[in-house]
Each structure stands twice: as C-alpha cells, then as structure tokens.
Length: 493
Image (cartoon, rainbow, N blue to C red; front, side, top):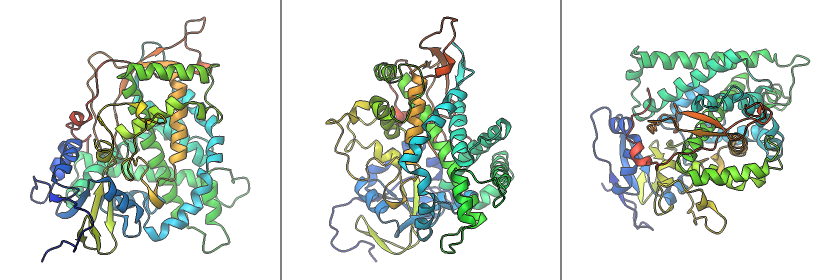
C-alpha cells in the first residue's frame, strides 16, 4: 500500500539515505562524520528516511517543514532517542517534558527569565567574566573551552543558587557535564541499550558522571533546607522551592520536579553558552577585519574598561552581529529529535504515531538557499537592510514555537557581556600549528580550544588592567571550512 497522501500541496521530495548497516543503521555514518553526513542528506530529499539503530526515523531537511514541526508541538512532541536519554538523566524539566506538562512548567519559570530580570543580572555576568580570566597573562596559552565552561557554569550557578558553588564542586560539575554530553550523542544515533550496558571505560565514565551530577545538584538543593527561616533567596531555586511548598495544588510542584528543573537549567545553561563563546573566539581569530571592528566598538562603548551594563548592551551592535553569526555558523544545539503523538502528514507522506523525526539547526543554517555563501563567517549578513529574508524555520538556534528555549534572553545577554568584556582587554590568537577540529557530541563547538592571550593595552606596570579585565579579539589567517571539519569523529563517546 502506498504511504503517499493524496494531492500534496507542494512537490516535496522524499528519499532514503544510503549506507544502512545491520543493527546500527546510519549510526556509523553519524558517528564517524556527523556534519558531513548531515550535509549529504538534502540531496536525497526534503524529508529523508534514516535508521537509528533498528528504528526507522525521518530527517527534515527543508526549513518550511521544520517550521511545521516546531509550530505543532502537540503532534511533534519532545521525544525520540535524544529526549529519552535526557529524561533519564535530567528528569522531566522544562526542556525535556512532554507537551501536556510544558505550559505549567514554563509559566512557573518564566519570571526568572524576563528581560528586566536578565538585565539586572548583567553585573553578575561581568563579575564572573572577570573572575574566569583573572589569572591570564601575556603570552600564556589558555584553555578557552574550559574557561568558558567555568564561566557559564558559574553564571547559571549564581542565577540558580545565588552563591556560586565552591571551586572544587564547580570543577567536578564541569567534568561531569563534559562526560555526559559526549556520551549522549552516541546513545542518540545508536539507541541500542545493550551496547551501553557493557562495562567499557566510556560507559563507566558516563554512568559515574551522571550519578555525580545528580549528587551535586541534590546537595545544593538540600543545603537550602526548604521551609526553614532564613533560607529563602531571590533566585531561580527560590522560585522553585516556593512553588514546591505553595498552597495552590494545581500549581504546586514536587521536590522531584524541583530537581529536574535545576538539572535542566544547569545542563542547558552551562554547556551551550560555553560552546557558543568558544566558537565565537575561534571564528574571530580567523577573521581579522571582524575582530578589528569588534575592538573599535568595545573600545568606545566600554571606554573605561568596565564590564557592559544593562544600558550598554543595545549599543554593542557589531558584537551582537558577531554572536548571531556564530549561532548561525555553529549552533551549539545542532541536532534534535521529536516523536509523533498521532498519525500525521509531513511533506505529503503519512507518518505513523510514534515515529522519530529529526531536524538539524546546523543543516538549516548552512542551506545556501537561505544563507548565500553559508560556510563563510560573515557578521555583516545581519546588518539592517542587508539581513537576508530568512524563511521561517531556517534560523533556529533556540528552536521556535511554544517550545522555544526559555533561556534565550539570558544566554544572549551573557554571551554579549563575555565577548565584549574579553575583547576590550585581550586578543586571543591560535598557537602555531593549530588545526581546527569540530567534534560534535550532544552539542556542537570546540571542546579543546587552546589559544594564546595577548593584552590589548597595558597598565604602567606592564600588566593588564585587571579591574576591567579580560579578553578576546582574535586573529589569524585562513578560512574555516565547516563541512570539511565535519569529517572529525564524534568526541569520546
């Protein structure tokens, strides 16, 4: 029997990706060269059939179809291998819960992410940028990836818990996050549970990291001793704990839900923002003219060397274009899954209930039909009057629709503060012999980026002015080829 729906309104192309392996499906291709594999799929159709292990799935390659998926969150619910794994790790938080629970959870957290509250936290963000880079010295090789993860984890930690975690606990949390994100990707593209019960070193690292991450969060929540006098604070955990002991039965949440929300916010807030920042610094280092213009802007807006305040953010227009183009060029969230809750029609085909549907912001952001010369890092494509007429579904670094990332405003503010503040004081350069490597895991970005820091200005003593500290405005020559970079293997699954 034909699966085609009668009289499709659009001449959509459908097909099947080649290279299916028994049991593993397309997992080998996804694992070995994930970005290259993604870039090959549009040649087979706008909707392409895949195998994730033994499961049949569909990759949506056209922005109009992706828009249809994201705008119908009831039919295309969060599910499939990625979210099945995330729920096991994080619980049913706002980023992973099913459609029926999402509205209540989002309404609960929304006050913590309103623009006015985020603007009030720019000082906190600036403090953490300075702290993260305090030990940098001229000529030093700096692990930018690790520094940015430290920064983003401390920022979300303060937003959640008011006070940052102690240094040892924060460092352990970072290590756990890295191990978990690396392991999640392989478990998404090869969802065969038996493979991950084998006690290999990688499987043991993943399990240990998951257990320790839960223990760290549980301890942080327990320390607040909910309900006792003097423990209430004006932070996101305070909002959650207040809801947990609220009188409104319809809105009250359980302690388990509090834990799930905290897990979700730490996981999303730390990993994605840190990778975005590392990518921005890496890309600026390859594009001296964009770096120079960034320097000129931050030198004017931050003339006194201080961190950006809430009133400065709207003036950092080129900084924001750099950030937008980074999110287009290297979206940290590069691959997502959904699952159909009922039989539906997509691209003129009937898709059964329970089908896994995938979409990739990376693939859409590199579509030449939406973004001319897509492999070029070009912040000026976002100039007023020059920005492309981006079709719905083509530029989705934070997704779209009612499941759009609740932390978008927070993440953009944090990244803008970090890029501007660092670029005001430092230039980061690639060391000699640097080779670009993009290793996608559950998120995309450089995980081992080491750069040499050079102060852009010096105090009379010959050292950088730490009161306004920090750094990056990168330079080197050469163009980045993300499609070639997609040839790198997935990092340590």
